[in-house]
Image 1 (cartoon, helix red, strand yellow):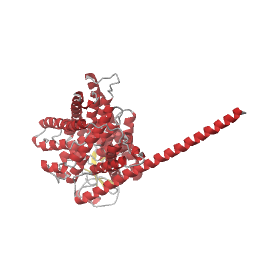
Image 2 (cartoon, one colour; image 1 turned 90 degrees about the vertical axis):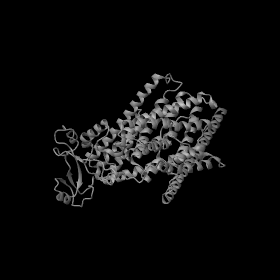
Image 3 (tube, helix red, strand yellow; image 1 turned 135 degrees about the horizontal axis):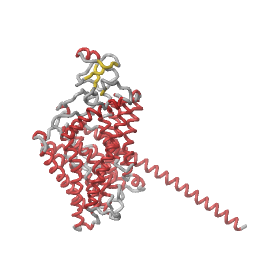
Image 4 (cartoon, one colour; image 1 turned 180 degrees about the horizontal axis):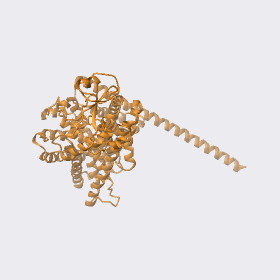
Length: 580
């Protein structure tokens, strides 16, 4: 009997304890939910404050601070209040920068938009310089910066325990430039298009290169049997090239599959479904590359470029406008959300380790490594350019000035904060981002005036040679055509693209010998170049065709007037053969 009583008491006590634990767990979950909602509401409030301030700045033509700089300033102020306000600090714990959220949610639309909004004519015209700065220049910056910092810590300054791998990883992540502030001012002031193309193209590819370099170098940890020696150096180059090329292949493959699907299917009759399929397929590029151990950033970047080059022309007019506006909006919100988050992290991140001397030397090393990147490579590039196409010194100085660091550098630094060295790198990276965005970004207008770089330049100042007509309003992502004076390799690729790839993936091209009968027509596009060639087509009104005596290939609508530049897409049109 006593045993039964004891068992009953024990059972009641255990159930009571479990009940109290469940209540405590529910209360804790509720507190976390409230803190998360409050922190998100705070970030949304910061974004709204940024939007209103930018609106006021645009009205008054005030260019000293860009919206990203405002987001950082507002984030710093909010973080300061949260950190030093009395009471519960649960909100502070929920506003910590999460690198996983950044890479999977916020970074993807930013990188995709960079590729999708690329001005291809200017990009391909400066492709040699862009590739040299992005690939070779980023590598140079990584090793020069890493070497300077290793020399500093090896000299025993501030007693920092940081090995060569840590320093090179720091060099790789800090080499990711993010001149969004400068480029926004360039766009608003319409600065020289070639300078804009060089800086934008370099920054787009540079981010992807820096991420791959960082992950490659970070794999050489002291605890593993893979020391970073000469063999490791060449192995890392091979791994880097393999990851980059593989990721690029996945990105372009997704873009081409999307282009074929949009071209051959009738989903364009349902613009909402068409846009949804476009967005989902584009995002799948990032996940596919990450799933096989490659770089999703590189993949989604080239997906964006491929979608702009091939798929855009296969979309309905409504989907063209919708996708442009959708990704532009996502890019704006994600970018400013990240910079607000970054400003908050100055006071809310728990892993800061402050080393003032290390921070100052790092800022100087950033500037020096950028100079060692831009000036020597520009000199080499100019050796192979005609005098009127060389990169002038004022462009080079502007590129050095515009070497801002941004959210990608900070997110890479925050992904590893286990050792004291990694915490020092994180804090230093944050200070470099704040310094470059606020100081260099804020001084962009002044620097443009000082260097006397021309502004008020229209994109159409130079008319591209083209074997088809395009409307810049209807298709701002117009394709680049082969031009005289380009590098032989680039010109060969563009010729191959025009003769073989565009006829397969671009709905503006039809084969006059073989009508389009579905997916079977894809193979027909690879006919011998000496036979009937696929020719580009544009839409024009029947009246205009009759007036000009052109050949009518197809009629699918009522008569309408023709603008000065014929439309690429539209429901009422007649196809016009431009021919050879």
